Image 1 (cartoon, one colour):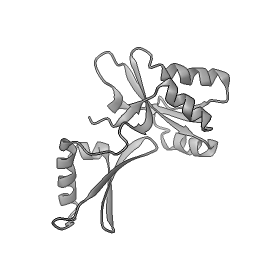
Image 2 (spheres, one colour):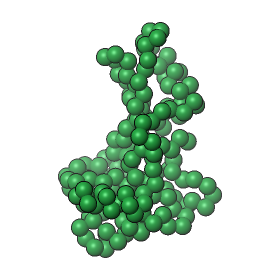
Image 3 (cartoon, one colour):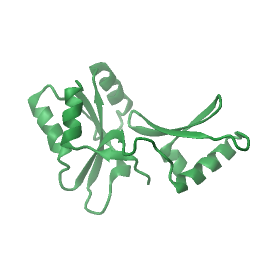
Image 4 (cartoon, helix red, strand yellow):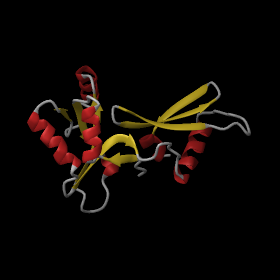
Length: 161
C-alpha cells in the first residue's frame, strides 16, 4: 500500500496550534501500519472550526477508533503531544503529504492508465494527464485532469485495479 502522508511530530503540532487549530479528528489509518511491531496507525486532521471538525467526525461515524480532540482542554492537548511522540507500537500521521508535489509511483501509474481506459476516457496523444492527490475526510483521492475533463478515484479503489 502506498502511504504518501507524513508522521506527526511535536514541531508540526506546535505549528498547527500556533496557527489556531484547536480541533483534531483522529481516525484509523490502515495504510500507515508499517512493520510487525506496529499495532495500529492513526490519521490526525486539524481544524480551526469546530463545525468542520464535527462534519468530519460525522462522515467517519463507522470508524470505531474515531475521536475528536479539543486542544483547548489541557488533558486533550497532552494526549495530542503524546501522539506526536509516536508511542511504541503506534504510528500517528498528519493529513499532510510527505512531498510538496506528489508524483504517483510506477505501480500506481499503471493502475491510473487502466482506470482511464476502463472509464472510456481518451485524452489524446501528447496531452498530459495531471494527477493530484488530496484528502477528503481522511480518504486519499486521486484527481485526474486533462484539459476541462476531470475524473476522481480513491487511492484504495485504484490499488485494487
